[in-house]
Length: 388
Image (cartoon, rainbow, N blue to C red):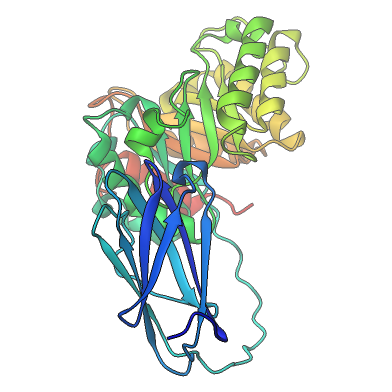
């Protein structure tokens, strides 16, 4: 082995808790120490390059060892002349931990045939919420996963230390699939500190591969909030400081729709002054949403209001989400079918449906798709929702 040569090892790393000295080996030969300083939480990486003579006509093994107390080392990738090394354990490292990356022989250059890319998967049917979320298993999502349209919806009310392990387990069911095709998990936020670095999202929800790309902002339950210019300005400030600054390009839909008896349900959503601040907040967040128990759609006023809301949002280029939740004594799957068919018959096609349970034991909750569960309702939407 030499310090110079025609081959290059490239290693990307970061650290949590302070600088780390990392030993690097190639084929069990020591290549010296590297000083790692870039903070993992910043999202940046440190790239280490070492040159030598390691012909890619043979396989090689790159080794990385953590040599510092009190810090955590993240070895994100290792390659030789652009050939990626494969590591069976990519978890963060503490002192004396080793990671070995197996670099295969360089493959012969093959000119691939011209292939028309498949239509991207659209995650337009999400499931989650609060009631029963932490008990969801892979068995509860078999049919939804097969459709390729399913995703996870996380209500931040479940983000605490007691639920963290269960939340991480549930998210691991679908996040790898979503990460691979560039899609994301959606989050329901409140205007609090949860999305700040180190707060509830980082502590109790975040797992490797989870990307925040869209969300719902729970502003309150009364339609009168839509008339408050002060609330409009405070919500815009929160979205800017806590969401846009951390996840640029995120869309976030404010939920400030009335609770079933608002005097303004009969007014036109797109033109009436009562809804002006809500329209402005939706345009600022780049997304619109209605949130209502599915059984409420037998109320003419609600249906008229939400159809007008959705039609206005879609006509103005905004994605439009509909959150459907169960109520006690109702048949949730049947209610969801009724709601979806009403929207489609009216010529309004929501961008995304979210089925969500707020209260354990009310109406129905998360479970197998063979019963009247949120999962069966979500599966029906995924099997019947027109492709947009």
